[in-house]
Length: 231
Image (tube, rainbow, N blue to C red):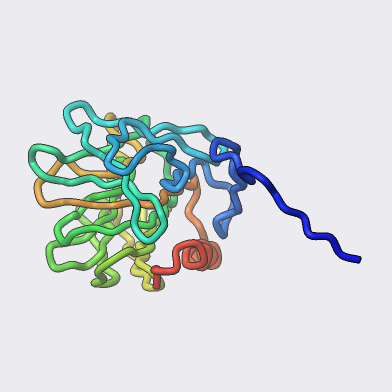
């Protein structure tokens, strides 16, 4: 004889710890997930704490640009940096010169948001023609032109040229001539304080190593399963 069990009242505690699945590749230092933010849409986010990784990390607003805000689209939370001259916003981590490194992000940017996520001299964004790009020093590589949410990743080596690979969705471009980290300012960041560079982010992950192609493919596959809008 079977029994029907009825639960009366809430079945989940919104403040309880969440289960984090490995995002395709382990060994990451810090992972930031907007879905884990417990703030209202439209609320200013002055700091963003990592929810996983070997090095607990906080990104905090740059003085004078406090207008990174939370929002929701298609059931997922995001952070929004308006990127206008008065209200641009950037969340910045502690300075680091770590190379090699890999950064993965789920973002959406306006054309012209050339440096909306990155780390000390090596950045990712979207150029004025709409192509997503990775930039390190004077070297720029542009995989795809794409509207809407995109999986973006940059993986940089510590070789003689500080070479890097930029990936947008499933397309990759390599460049042999990146640069090392700048000497004194900046760490992992999201957002912009420049006019016309509005950007959104749902998730941000940092590894202190250059992920292999196999691992980059695994991270992309994981993100596609988590965010169905991704190609």
